[in-house]
Length: 453
Image (cartoon, rainbow, N blue to C red; front, side, top):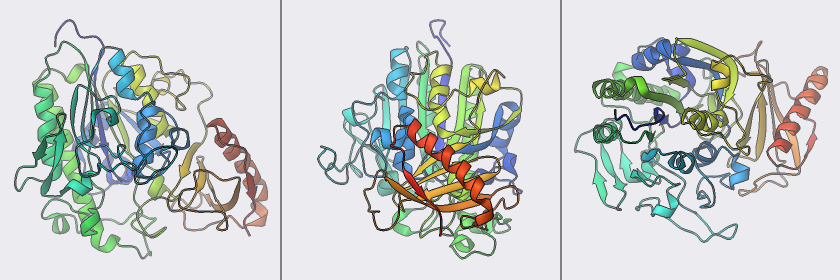
């Protein structure tokens, strides 16, 4: 590493639709994630982590900007990130970092004209530079990777708009990681780098309507232990869960490849490695598809961090939001997080100097319905816009109706909805106040919340 470099390298590994309990360090009994488990033993494992928006594009907009999806306007898929937003790449570039992106972007296309923007479709085309969120130094991506590839074929586009194909017969996670290793091998070391790696797995393959693990996954992982929230449910987990675990196993194997390469190149000691996901997966047990609900199957995600400031094999029990990662990344790169960022840097928790850390996680929900949720250690409380005013492009509502209440201490798998229980009226009222406070805190108007039933 060149002596001119300032600050650690930052490699952000981002999976898609991965439940927290697929990792051994969170209790997965099968040998799915030995490399991530080792990373947790050597770094920091965050035990209670939740997305701020359980759908792909909106969650990415939050992660790139530190703002909630209603603030960026990217509250549903198919809405591009406004070019006026300052992203992690913009901030770190200004601090001397080389910024690179490899994988799924999902923030360049506008499915329809709205909010003064024209329809613009690059879901299967090269993304123009002005729609890449400031990742100007290195680019190899597709806007919607599931539309330009399958598990064993496909392509992305480089910074010049040239198509780059996966090698024949190469599994998608392996091929993408090959390109990550190429990137690492070609760094000159004159500047620190921030590399964001956005995998598609374990997201289902849209046009095949299946999860697609590496060949042999169905046999290899057929002896799974079913997560408690799926027991006794319908859904499609019977057919799909082994391949889903196969996807997660492949991701873990490639985390191992990246760590080995960082070590070989002499970069490991000065590289912050972050692994997390955009949201979880409930296998069509809570609604008609896989996410977009208030339940932990949708909201709860893994988070393992290793590198400068994140060592020692610690486990953090505090509630953490995906919104806390933007200021964490900036703080690691020596950039003071701007005041508009809604989360808080996780270095406060690892350094032991956090004060007034939030006692709840807050999430906005869209596409399946317009909803808002708070989750504390004990309670899950969620509301949704009433049917008579809901419509597909509803960003927020003036009125919500109580939808779900779960006592997570007594019912960790959220099987018994207590929203209509009269003897919990006080609990619901307190949680409603907390929810409204969080909504107002991100620029929403104080809503009317109507009681369930």
